[in-house]
Amino acid sequence: MAKYLVTGAAGFIGSSLVRALLDRGEQVRGIDNFSTGRRDNLTEVIQRMDFREADILDLDAMHKACEGVDYVLHQAAIPSVPKSVLDPVGSNRANADGTLNVLVAARDAKVKRVVYAASSSVYGDKPTLPKHEAMSPDPISPYAVAKLASEFYMVCFYRCYGLQTVCLRYFNIFGPRQDPSSPYSGVLAKFSTQMLRGEHPTIFGDGETSRDFTFIDNAVSANLLACSAPAQECAGRVFNCATGRRITLNETFEAMKKLTGFHGKVNYEPERSGDIKHSLADITLAQKHLGYKVLVNFEDGLRRTVEWYKSQAKAVSA
Ligand code: UD2
Image 1 (spheres, rainbow, N blue to C red):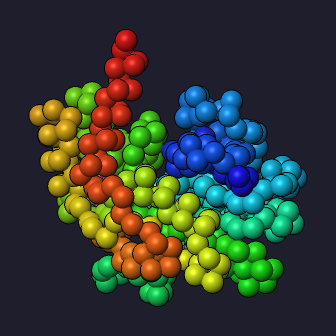
Image 2: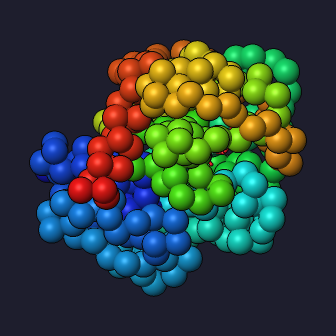
Image 3: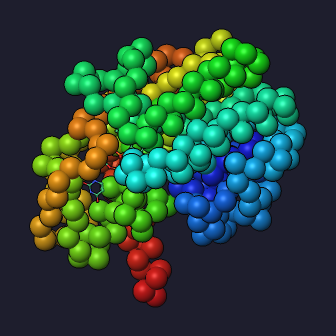
């Protein structure tokens, strides 16, 4: 049994990792400052883990959190492109300064490996598709810049201090527990709840924007593989975490109409600043070095996601 620290444990991805680790019988410590995470996400598992309310910007707390830990899964972030455009300093604090603290604490505690929630946004808006890890990054939002700075810190901590680090560039992860309630929430969480309530969703742009939407189980599996893969395959490296397929927002809306029973129309508004038009991953590197496989495709993931939001709506109205 190994000991894992999940930062951002009360968030959508963090809480999914906590569940997967507990299911495998691992020891789990989690921290969250509840800036975007929610206590509800941990309701039925919090008794089985060592949860601490703490901020990754608090180096003392991070030192304590890393004591006796084998693996750190660093998910804590303010995950939003438009929010970073409004507040670049806040985004940088959480998404870059916070990562540096996590790394310093992990290095001092002699953690075996740190796996980082990097972002596909670092590729920027160059037309070449699919995006592969050897391409030069070209971030176009403050969020992407901060995420890229964190990647560089991860790689540099391997080179300077020998701390094993792995970056997983997440491509639009979606699924149960993704928070739908903020204007900055992920599009599939927003669409699910809006369409189930009979509200008209909004598409920013012409709807031909495409994403490599990746169901949460794939990201959880990538994290577990990134912990267990031999160091010579993955330490100090960066991998795409995606499906290798892309879907437009218009196609997504049509698919969701069937799943939610929504019959209305979608509103179109101008594109958001910092948005990328098309995103699609080459996942060869993760397949080769981590043994990564797509476990759940977009259609099955979307069906499971909508079912979950339906069950939540029923629980509220019961
Ligand atoms: C970026 C990253 C993603 C992850 C995420 C964290 C890219 C390609 N992806 O996601 O990997 O790091 O940031 O937040 O950079 N939209 C609508 N209507 C809505 C909400 C969103 O049309 O109500 C559009 C939005 O303008 C964008 C697309 O849907 O074109 C996806 O938006 P998102 O906020 O779900 O995620 P994105 O792509 O910014």
